Image (cartoon, rainbow, N blue to C red; front, side, top):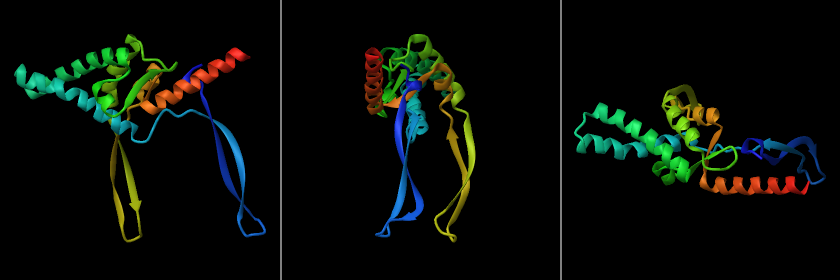
Length: 189
C-alpha cells in the first residue's frame, strides 16, 4: 500500500431548509472517502525556514573560516546543503532544520527516501525557490480594507516529481499506523 492510495473517511454535514419541531435546523450527513492529505498548514514556510537553517552553518564556515566572499559562501553553502541533506534524509529522514520544525521526509511507502530520491529532491529544491506572487484583499470592515501582494514559495515540485511526502512527525506515526492497518486488511482477504 502507498501513501498516495490512502483514504480518509470524512463526514460532512450540510444544512437543509427544514427545521424540527423545536425549531432546530435539520442536517444531512454525507460520508466521503477522500485522499489522505500529507500537506499541513504553513508547510511551505516551515520548509523554507528549515532550508535556511540548514544553510546558515555552512555559509558561516565558508565566510569566516575559509574567508570566501559572501556570494561564493552562499553558492558553496547551497552545494553543501544539497549533499548533507541527501545523506541526512537518506539515513534519518530529516535534516537539522527539518528536525527543529519537526518535519520528516518519507517516500510513498512510508520509509526514509533512498539515496537517489533524496538527491533528486535536494537538487530540485533549487527550482522551489522561485516565488509565486498573488494579490490579496482583506476586508475586516468596509472601512478597513487592506490590499497588497503576497509572496509564496512553491515547495511541492520536488515531492511531486520524486513521489515523496514532507510530513510532520505526528503525521508520520499516523501514516505508519494506517499503512499497517491496510497491510493487515490485505493479508486477511
